[in-house]
Length: 226
Length: 226
DNA sequence: GAAAATCTTGAAGAAACGATGAAGGAGTTG
DNA sequence: CAACTCCTTCATCGTTTCTTCAAGATTTTC
Image 1 (cartoon, each protein chain N blue to C red):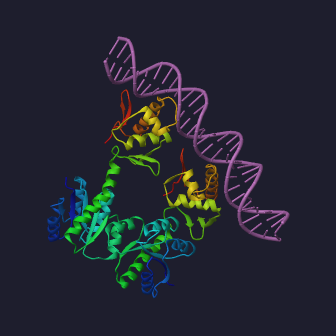
Image 2: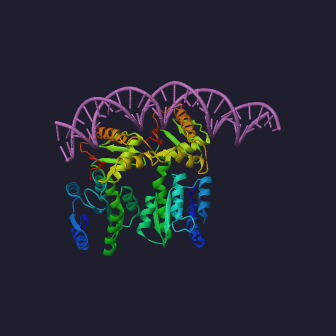
Image 3: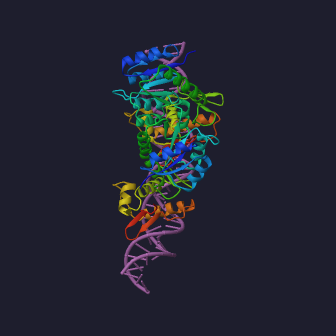
């Protein structure tokens, strides 16, 4: 399936040119209006946005700022007539993923889009990989849902991590004991049940309605979301 | 007063060239060795570092990583023979402030250095990423809060630095032992607790109410502010 | 509807943390 | 070089938090 690209430029001639170059490789949507671009990005789900920095009215950088607020994960490539350093640096600071100056080689443009897509693919997958809106930050040891942190104990955290890292995969209690508690742990396997229950309670209290931890009857548990 | 620039490149011919170009405008120090560069950056206080990304031994990007650990505020401009996008993106992701490809125009190089200096001047004054009002001067090894200096012991300072340079990131006691005490230290991990406690006490006595050092139960500690 | 498995509850006790203080080491000063 | 101060380490104790497991309630399966 082709990646979808949103192109924003005020010059219609440039829009046509870009569209022509990218059509063979990507699914292209074009617009010359910043507001229209925002609206499109809200209703559609683009893989990438190609954005002219020099636009009258709502400038490219302002549009990027707005996009970053709403579509935090949408990769953006800036396009500019000038090869001005300030522009480039500012663009990258605002969160653009790359910067291309006109005139450009058609082949290079396509290549760069592919590069950015490859580089950002992980990013967008990583955040989705869990239940909608549930975010797990391993480095910070934090779990967030809907803007609220869910405080977990060490075992709960490890349990969540083990399950969520392998969505849909069923784990027996013994496997979980080994992975979470350690291979040398000896104890009642039903202890797992208690922690699963507590985890479920905490997730539910945080507002997560979906049953993300599913019971595999006669066996164990699995992560059900996504 | 001229701004001081540290130039790191393994090719002596390039060093001479760069030095010649920049001498009229900046106070220049050169080295062709990564370790030497680290040492220099510790003892001197440079305004900017010009760094070749393609260096044998300790590579440019590794050096940048080290620099970022120790001299969080030192602006860095990457220099590369290739105009490779990956390089550029990686450099900027690692925290480089700009990226210049060889060959370059002498005038352009000077201009870019000025631009980065202007842009980063605020940063070094602002001291971002810490608790409100808490200032840490890495070069002077001083910590200030609300106009008063907080006297810290070496371990306390190093501990504070490690935590504060990575806000929100959770560190286990073992990680802290390795980073602060050294990889070859063997001793009770709970020694960390004592120093954390002393640090907290000193920060509290200085008037810092916020709990900037948070306990990560069953794991370690993290810097909680910002 | 009985058997088996899971879910819930609660209380004992295990583990982790914070605080204190003493012993010993490092570095400094007279 | 001895006395002093400051720093580091670690053992200990009280407190908080987490884990475990047993027992009864509930659900699922056949």
